[in-house]
Image (tube, rainbow, N blue to C red; front, side, top):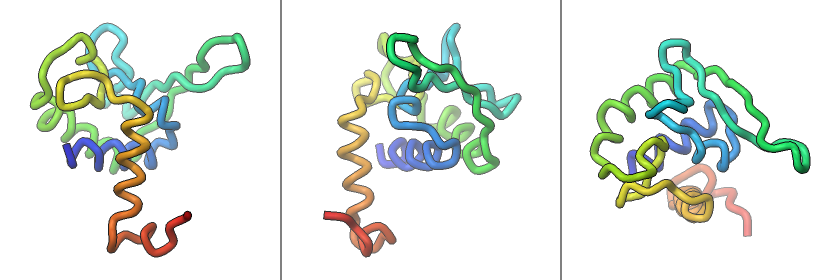
Length: 123
């Protein structure tokens, strides 16, 4: 689970995605958003009021490409199959991660002693 959290944070920072965009990435199925061959990820982001989601395609940096490739080939197959298995980032039971869970975990990582953010943490 630590690898999943680390990879989620690295990918979010590298591609400049909002948390909701990151957790909405599908890595399998008909509506796959990750294209490693072209080095791009499709994100569904914020749109204007009542206009639906805004679609954007962002390039993968070399680090994001390498991390995603490793995650998809080694780590993701360890998660159990479920109805939400198309999503890139899953919980231990194979369901889609929620924004609340991701926020809580991100805060724990930031507040770890020894990290740069711990020194400058906000209250």
